[in-house]
Length: 181
Length: 170
Image 1 (tube, rainbow over the protein chains, first blue to last red):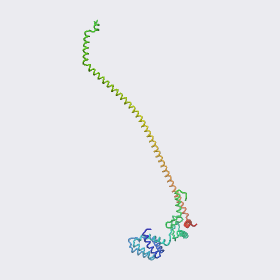
Image 2 (cartoon, chains in turn red, cyan):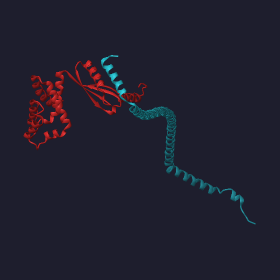
Image 3 (tube, each protein chain N blue to C red):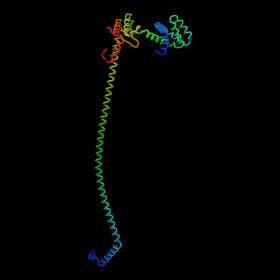
Image 4 (cartoon, rainbow over the protein chains, first blue to last red):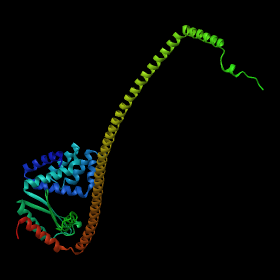
């Protein structure tokens, strides 16, 4: 995470903390991140030099004004004025990260070859909550190359219980000349 | 018949003989007076020269003997020295030969060792390459087999293992 994104994130995050709207800010940051993911042309619009700042701010007001809190809308307009809108994605990530820390939330990803059933995800989530002592928000990502099993990523920790990983270990062991699989 | 006065012919005429004796005497005296000194002097000088030549010859002979002895000694010394030189040269040549042979032996041994090491390395590389290929084939086949048979039960087994590892529960 770059320092610039951290500084801007800290600014709006402090405001939300004062207003006790950290959870709402987190949700808006996640929603906005999703919008940017699904509509990359929006980033292109914000970066376009032929479009004036006023036009960009009008768009922000018209598109996001009705659904987002006015602090978030004003924050985006500020980024336009400061010419920092290109860092919006990193800033949103930093906001979510700070909000998670504030709310005691730990995000986790579980990769699997198939979509996991809700009951299985719940078991994993509870196990992680027991281990971390924090509220875990678990997301399931599909990766067919894993063949079978799961890979759980929590922060920098990775627990790999996939068949792909086992095969790779077995292959490494065989290439090393060991008989242990 | 030839009339020859044999007695007259055999016995000299005394007068003639006397004249002849006188003339001989005069001739002798003249020769002694005029030639005796120079002849004697000549003969003395000749004798001295011959004596001197003889002495020089003797000296030369002695010098020749001396030179011959010296030459013999030198020859003997040279012979001894040459034998020593030849002996030293032979010894040095033997030493050099031994050193060359040892060096050649060491180099041959090193070359043999290098060749063996290279062969071993190539053999190991080939072995590893074959092993890698076999493992790749085996892993590809295993992956295909597992992928065909993989299902949610396998995922659930993994979840069970994960939950057990994380929580420490049985």
